[in-house]
Image 1 (cartoon, helix red, strand yellow):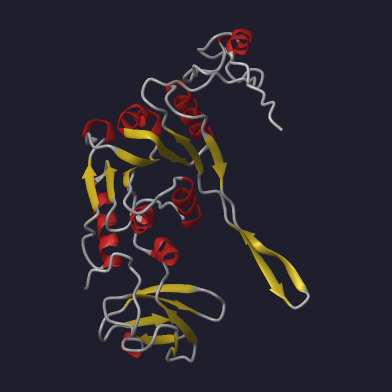
Image 2 (spheres, rainbow, N blue to C red):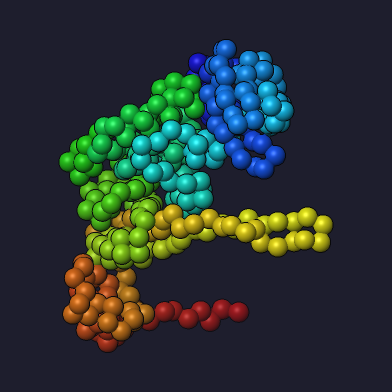
Length: 323
C-alpha cells in the first residue's frame, strides 16, 4: 500500500482498502476488500470484485436482491469500526481533545494509553508530518493492535509516530512536549512526570470514565500547584429526525463514554492563584481522603492559607480611570 499520511483515499476502490456497506435500514458493515472474496449475508452474497475498480459511493446488490451503498470510511467511521482489543476514545471526545487540547501542525504530543489507536489517528492528522506523537502503552498486545490499525489507515508506518511499551512514569523520555493526553486508569499518578516535560502554557488533557476518577485527577492537578484550575467536561450528542412536519429529537442518543479534565502548565516556580470561591460544604471534610489542593484554604479542608487570609492577601484589582 502507498503511504498516505492523511489516510484520505480517492479514485476507484482497490483491493486492500476498507469500505463501509450500508443497507436501507442504516445498518453498516466494514469490509476489507480482497480479490475474489465474498461477504455472506442473510440476503445473499456480495462479491468483493463487484466493488473493486468501481467508484466511491457506488451501490451493489447481494445475490438475494438487497442493495448496499459502498463508501470509503471517513476517519470517524474507521475509528469506531476498526479492529480493537481495548476500548477506544470515540469521535465525539477525540474532537474535543483535538480542539480544546489545541493540537496544531508541528506539535510535540505525548499520549499515554494508546488503546487501539483511535485517538492516535486523530492526533496524527492534526499535528501533520512535521509534528511528533510519542505514545505510551503498558500492554504490548494493545500497542500491536494500535500499530496495525494506524498502518492500515495510512498505508504504512507513520514517520511522526513512536510507540513505547511500558509504564509511563518509568519509561517516559526527557523530551519537551507541547501537549499531553492521559487516557488511563489512574492518570493522577503521572501528573508530576508529565508536568516536568510540558512547556509553560502547554495543555494537559486527561480522559477518565467515572466521576470518582474525574474528582481524583482534578484534585491532583490542583494539589500539584503548577497548573491552571482544570476545566471538567462531558460531551453528549443527540440525533434529530427531520422529515416534512415531523421534526423531533431522535429516539436514541450517545451514551456516556467519558469525562475530560483540561488544564494548562504554568511557568516554572509559579503557583496557581489562591481559589477565592468557597468549595461546597464538606467537599474536603473528614471523610475526604484524596490530595488536598494548595489553592483550597486550610480552614475549608485544603492545604493553603485560611480563606480570610487568602482574601486579605489577594492583590486589589486596579481600576482604570480612563474614559
